[in-house]
Image (cartoon, rainbow, N blue to C red):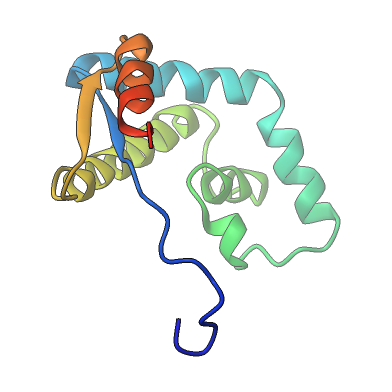
Length: 127
């Protein structure tokens, strides 16, 4: 702010987290991975690689993209691919939950209750 004193102060931050039962969260992750694979995710990765992007670039190291690129190079079987992506996604989700649980002021609502999140936001954002 010293270098740009004309800018307003920091914006108000409101954090809302969806709290899912672990089994439900994992089932949702498994379903989503399956949907993405069925919707052409492999073709997307193939197109990116064929366009000449380095498989070691950061975006291609992301969850799922790494595994799909390995499959396209013949380094990973199709049979275990979906499970490997889902496992890596679940691990990432667990790290996210750990991080957000330590976030001061986070408000948690049941995962299936989008209306509770909206109600909290409406109340929190009234100025």
